[in-house]
Length: 430
Image 1 (tube, rainbow, N blue to C red):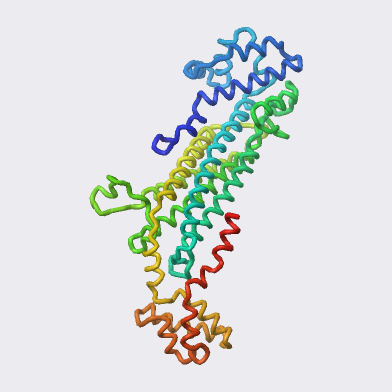
Image 2: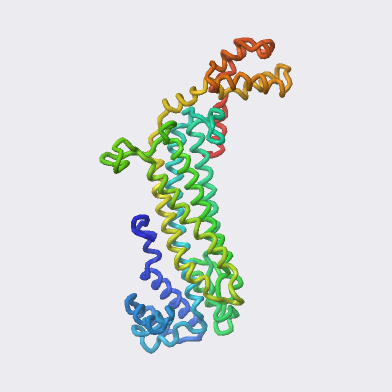
């Protein structure tokens, strides 16, 4: 997590001040529930709220002696609360605080990421509608295939990120659980009603069965979803990078006044933002395997997952937040060149209509094998620079005995390939 790729709101979630504030609220809400149950005096629970304070520097100082962060926090809290602090953390274990806090932090991070996705979806929808009928080349294997529209390309990405939003909503709900069940999760020294109370106050659901930790399959799923979102970011970034290649130049990242593309070559306009996004996606995905490996803890708990989560929690969410915001800016300012798209459509002299000719010949009575051979032999001549596809077809006796010039010309119609764009847009945008 470095400032270059971090935004303040997401960073704050992972700062010690927020973490210890959540710890305090968990402990204070637990005291309230214990007081209602008659386990601790109500005055003691009230004192925790009224006098409860902490200092990050002081906690760090104590931890250098205790080598235990939760004990350091509780010691600092007691310095402010006084004698009533002896009722804090009654029947609880450190994981009750740590795991419940992590659930809150991941929920907070998800709220920001969901807003990021909404911003990206809005940008994609606007640009997709803008270019709904802008014809461009569809490619498979990087090679010209058949016509599509640029709006249809963007609509596909919109649908993908809409699925990602649904995945994140589900993952957020799945990971937002509270465990206040004590050592090895048996509730031996704490009433389950305390857990229910804390969960409600912290906006979480109750973990049905915790050992001494919340099961890490929840976290593995969460980080896997972040990895999928990152992969979608990379897919869109890669598309833009390809479209910006000099030989293609159908779309291009915005190039700001005063921006420099190269220290050596003043003419350069490079796809630096989308290349950056490709790299950031790798960082987010790098959290997935460690999160999966965290699932298999020893018996009721160990702490092999702890060091991992202290790193991947902030790194993955902060990086993804930055990447989504950057991608939104790229889409909003993306320079689109319809003339270049049309030029590329025309580049192969009509070869993009080969399938339609093939199908029409089969409809007219030719076997598929013979039709394929007739179309392909003319297409290969065009690849070799030996003519125009339509004119070559008009000179092929095997073709013209079934299709006259007028029928062939009618097959070279761009509207044929875009006639169902509205149908797809209704499916995607409603």
